[in-house]
Image (cartoon, rainbow, N blue to C red; front, side, top):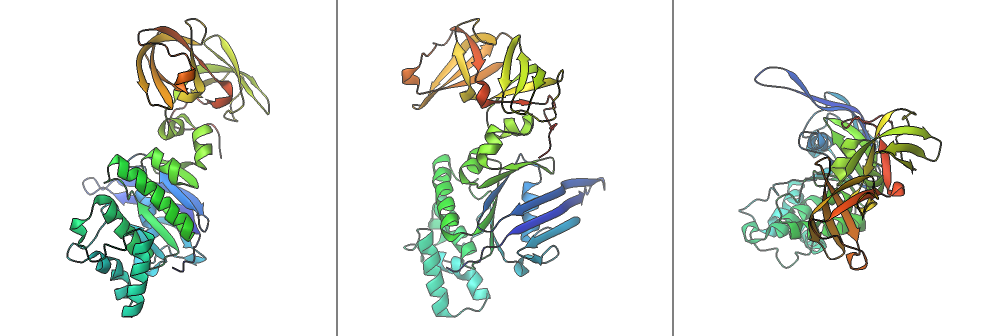
Length: 373
């Protein structure tokens, strides 16, 4: 398979719709700027209605931007139809033709391009081998499992050797185990081929495990772009922190900061935190964001907040302990290597503290951010 991976560039892309009932203009995507490098897998992540699928459809030519420019490679494709772009789309619904065999489904794009029989057979065989279905070419799609149907859809998209592969929540119809298996397979295939890929999902685990970079979207806007590690450990806002992973937020006040650390007071305790929103100033209210693995359970009175253990969930490699605090909120604490740690039984009175080096100080605006990327 000969692929020439191409970059994707969005410049000030906006998409508006008019509501049929009211005629009111609705902004689905607003002033989006994004660069995807050749061979990179970038995931658009966000809740329903955030604009991620609309953005993907604009890249593929299924929607036309109201404003802005879309480039694939060096070509301006903003107003080109899908068949004139060097892209291929894997849809959520698979979109397989039930009256055709697996072989003919995969061959469909090549037949439209008037390829010879010999070339079609060679390339279909190669594509089915790539996705591990070389022995099922004569089978009908209705006799395949969900995971196998998704592999056929992937093979059909790849066989036309696109410069950019677009994937619109391709695993959402699969059960949990198949989703996990297919995540691994898609990532292996993408890396082996070196193809540029833009992937859409609302599943944070999917995004974290697949992506070179994640683009978090909210209310039509790109709010943060970064590697999975950056997005998880250094979120730009409380919204991003809460969407990409479990988190607890403690209200505090900024005492001071320098280039290396922000010092804040939380419930009478002072902490020096190396990750912090840059625009915070002394005296500002703030939120201390803590992941479950960045907190620790101590004896009552030794931490920043007391509570009672309500539930312990043993996961083998870790224990998830839920603590109902004195303020009637529930905090999840992850205890790694539980066999070597003290586990407090359910009903125990405990206290929760935090690891400063694994936390971040954020602004109190939970929807937005006080820092710029």
